[in-house]
Length: 508
Image 1 (cartoon, rainbow, N blue to C red):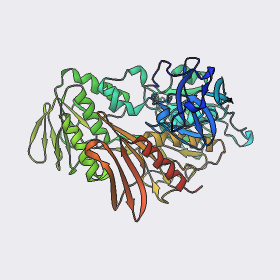
Image 2 (cartoon, helix red, strand yellow; image 1 turned 90 degrees about the horizontal axis):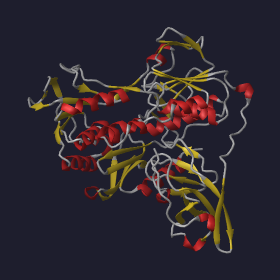
Image 3 (tube, rainbow, N blue to C red; image 1 turned 90 degrees about the vertical axis):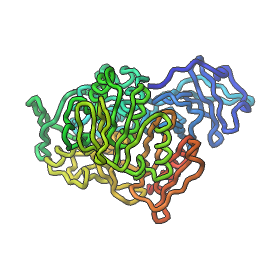
Image 4 (cartoon, one colour; image 1 turned 135 degrees about the vertical axis):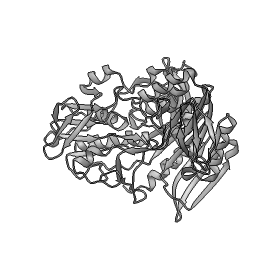
């Protein structure tokens, strides 16, 4: 969903003085009308596309590390020498041009081609790959298999009728009414067909026989696989209270969920959001943008305090209250009726619609049925291989050994799932590449974005630099003297630097 931009600055094809680069060694211009960024890194000049291929962020605001550059908004990473995408969430590489230096000037002309993948060892390749799950991990894996040169059959079985979509957008711009439905698909049907990827939407797998290496589908058919990737994702938790199944009670996970919620807004004026986590609060912000009266109910003392700590949780609460959201904290919903909800305190809130955002649970039924090792998720090794050598797993369902902390963790983040899909696909092809990515996610609250790098389920110290009230701060989370995670607000470069530093701390 990259933005289009008109050409600005000098035409690098005509040559520009190298002295025109700014103090950071960058200059924005174009190459024959194509927006481009010229930069000097470690004494060498590079020219790449000026806009990130994910959401169109200006790469001039990104961070160059070695021969790579990182997007300032959502931490996609690209190679400077070929423009290839190295880390999600971007799916496509940047354009990249050859740079010649003459007489103190830089001339940018010939576009470079992406690097060719290493040759595959045919003897070790599976005769087919089946991917169960069409979300972030499954989509990334299918694309990677083809990008890495695998020519065998690739089948993606997605239980979701809509196919792979940009799920983070559902609770943000799409629900708020500022993103078009056409922006949501990660790829077109034509894209999958052109790469001979057999994408089967609404293709629910009902049984997995690991011994026979077969799966059964809801339509009664069966399929054999040479290698299998489990990427079944997660299901939203639901309330177990009277009225939880009424038609005006919604969860938000799929495009169908979001479309049903949007369809209900025409006659709704008052909404109650149950849960003050990231999804609940992003929904609250989107509904406020639509003009609804919004009340948020949660048992916590402050929204997201268990994740962010009291200072940043207080900032988030202030942001939402300044936009008209009313919080009911330290309580729960006990009953839902057609036009109101009752809280544990006895208070009653008018509600034309209710949105439940109380977390998700991993979809483990197939893994359990197949007898795979389970550890509060599908247990995998550093290569994302399960206890069955023919089955890898990725995304929300996996618990893996985090190289940096030495702990086994499970993370429900979009970017993590995409990056795991890439690594799992490579390992299905015999690459033996350990998954060492640093977890990252972002959350948008009106015009304020929080970037979270690292992973801190528990901490004993939080250091705050800057002023949360001014939406300009960095929070660092520690345990036993070890830095575990960094959250930034209004400080994109600090977030990128923290990610790069964490990567350096990760054992090779």
